[in-house]
Image 1 (cartoon, rainbow, N blue to C red):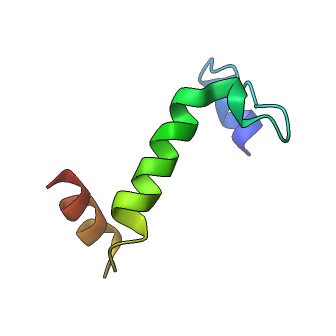
Image 2: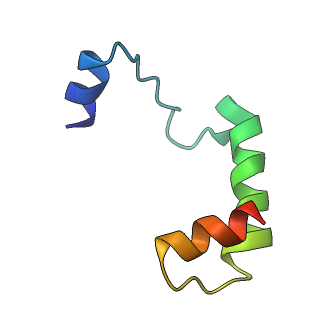
Image 3: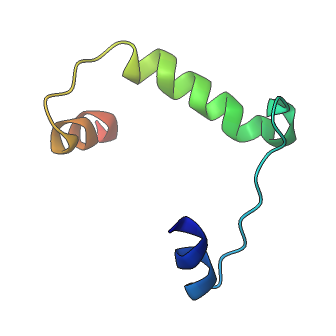
Length: 56
């Protein structure tokens, strides 16, 4: 399904190699901060609640 969407929208999918998070250190650092500062520290009641609180 993802492959089909990507093909139809002209998007090239380029996956990181398994076990190689250093292939994209910027996104790995972002994911780590998001998890620590938001996801592990908050309880979201809905997707809308999560969007509102993360934007704030």
